[in-house]
View 1: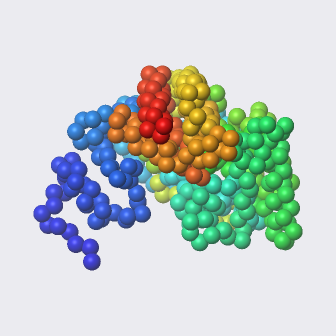
View 2 (view 1 turned 45 degrees about the horizontal axis):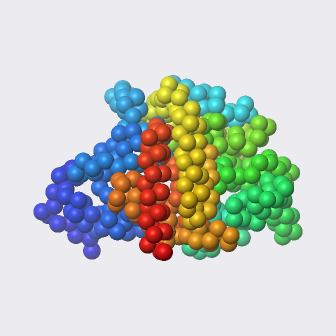
Length: 451
């Protein structure tokens, strides 16, 4: 039986850290884990790329890609407050903000992606994309990449190997293609055409599915696989996969929940890195879209949207695309443009990669440095030749950066051996230099202690 301590102070800002932690353990499901669970940080305010704890200690945030243009950006806050003071209501009432936001988004996308559905989270977006694909194709089966994660809804756990391998296992209608990892995957950098080679694994999978009397509805992939380890897909892969999947009657779904809205710098969407002529049939977006406010979207073609309408079942989302959410989304687009955050991602991201590659020459434990814009991964290995994942070392780097330097990073990849960087887009040259200087010192200390 859950009991409440009648003497508890309910004003959270007055709680001591230990009281907050005790209440969380007692009141919040224990599967909802904290960062740095052995020594959690209580964050009470933030600004830009910085977070502050209850004692005023400042931390450099290298992982909050949700707060895309910076924590508590004044333009975002002002837009939210102004619209909240004026109106926020059910999305089924006619309002300018939804159509104005959709029009702005359309201008960033290829012409054929012209119909939008607003929702509240990346998980909702991917769930809707799955429905759209299955309705359009009249098929059920889905192809996903190994180690992929597409969201926390039941439908998305089913198509996320990162999750379903820990739970009930793989469903009959889900098929897993190899992750196109040119560092440690089936086909590596020395292959003459890894993009085509990996795409052909999808074609063989389609043939296998057909041999069982089943049909493909969709190929789902993050434009840059994140949980898979900050992977950059080889050139030609996505276009060829799209060709194979469309020939089989399915659609190509690009999951931009982690990587959209200019994070890659050179383009507004990461799928645009895959070639000028490549265009998905469905694009899902989320996390950075509301700068911390719950806002997400699905963009698709007129043909897919018409097939969804033809099923005769009305689709509505009470909060998706409400006036406040769309005001925030419009303000976010304004900030990206006004502050040249795509340009900043190009410059700072390149500087970060160059600095990491420079210390790679001094530290054998750094197996690979990869990324684009402010989406960067540092893969640690115990043996460069065999590419043995250095999972424990990566965890230690994360722990020491937090404890010694007040820097937040985290790990990803199948073996949690990739230190990942997806900071707010206002991340600076000085921030990049500080992080790499601290990593260099920590790795030097670790090597000295091992000798």
